[in-house]
Length: 462
Image (cartoon, rainbow, N blue to C red; front, side):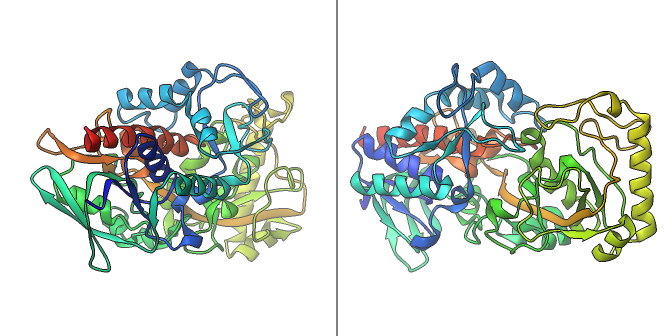
């Protein structure tokens, strides 16, 4: 055996799995497809984790009990895919911060901003990249062997047991237990096209180009039971001028609740003020993916300029809506009509009687407009006007493998693979359906990495 526990992947879930297995006394080998400077997958672009806690501290501004986190999770999208596993995730999130700190995580004081996460989420000092660097240092001290630039291309089987993996350079790696924590298939546009057709060509991938889903494909091909919707993904609105891969958090557009969003025909198509931003920001990638050309435009005026993180590539700016339309390549008459109808609906609503605040749903709603704007509605009437073009930015896909409450990968015949476990995005479809809650991806990776690591050691060492 090359190791007691083999971990495939190099992001948060993989490292948590590896560290947990090392804590349990196992010889651990971790295979990361990326080179050292790109190690960490999507986790490099994260900022925080959402965990239940009964009291606030110097890093959170108040309590966030289990019942509230569970309610929040149940109200995004269609709710949890598997309520039993989702509840387990929420319950085991409570001691995740202490475990993280013991393995190298450092926290920064609560941040304020448009996501309003100071009470519910803990922020990593230096962001996700710093967290991962700390974990890698801890793993090195714990004796975890790490191989970079190592792509796993095949899983080998003897019945329900994975006897080893093959790498792109032709090597065979064997271990008593295998943990698959290699992410989804969001960078595999050909795979996405099976469910989205030509529309997938308009998608941007917020993380690395390495997440092509090879290990996921191997598991499904070997008879793993799938979990999660085929078209499901965590996708946000990103600047259409950003890169095809690895734009991360820098290209995300946070302006949506502050103004209106229109499609390529200058028409609004969804309620920009449906709920607070942490519960709704991750629906906008899918919203845009369903529009003609997979493109949309966020518009706002000077009243709110500077109230949110500025777009990385600046804004289109004009003194009139018509001039702004010309800059964007939109029909000036159609866009002006949309803005005029929106302003009239604000006047008919009760917005004037309520103060504007982004701290919570303020009830400033339009009247007689379809789709409505349920909160934060105010006239777009103060030049200069600003806009950015947006495309779907996919963070990770939800289609993955089904697992037991011990992270064992289920088979379609009703059994489980004897020595194969999964953690992180590759099994997130057990928890998430169509929505997303800010910071919860890191929660899934941390909770299930610990479960997978513990169970893999139990199997390997008996």
